[in-house]
Length: 265
Ligand code: DGL
Image (cartoon, rainbow, N blue to C red; front, side, top):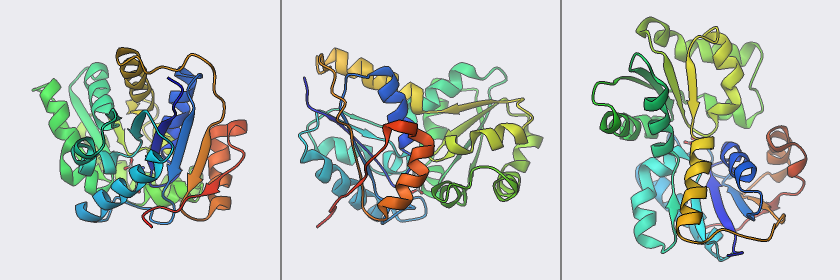
């Protein structure tokens, strides 16, 4: 089926998920929406996050998408069930895949989870990890300054290192062997985080696992595309130039043009 797959996030972070999907499913046409006018989502109320998520989905539905990937943990935590009830297409979130992966890789069952304030408060990761591994000991912490750092492209250097230290220092005393990056912006800080832990812990993000689930669902529902479609499209709700600058770092040559989307009008 040649219809595209719609993907949204509050900003550039979801490109980490898009990139993994593209790598695994090069035949699929992907349409990305970054809600840059309203980023960050993570410190807003559930009601607002759900409203933004519905509006983003409505925008993507105009392209007759065959599947939606919520490449945002905050929107997944607050709204995946609501979106699934409202829209009659398969909807994939990013929390379940990352939580499952963390349980697969941990050896001592001591797992750190970081995400936005809304994601951590929702306990979505904590509950899913526990459902897979009853004995898991979970240490969760919101890291609200990570999203603006990433949106600014400040993913390494003294400022990023200081903020990483401020948020993650406490984990060093907890003897965790696995840290889940429960926000799609955070993989862009992966090197700085790994350096902070002297590369001694496993860092899990949802991108690759989510891509595998997307592939599985496309196959199961016979929705996969057979002819290669390279016309991926990228939309933002504001400041396209800024998105392009940071997005190019992530996507390299695959991101050339960014258009402005009218969302929620
Ligand atoms: N990238 C998003 C997430 O995974 C949202 C970050 C934000 O806008 O606060 O949660």
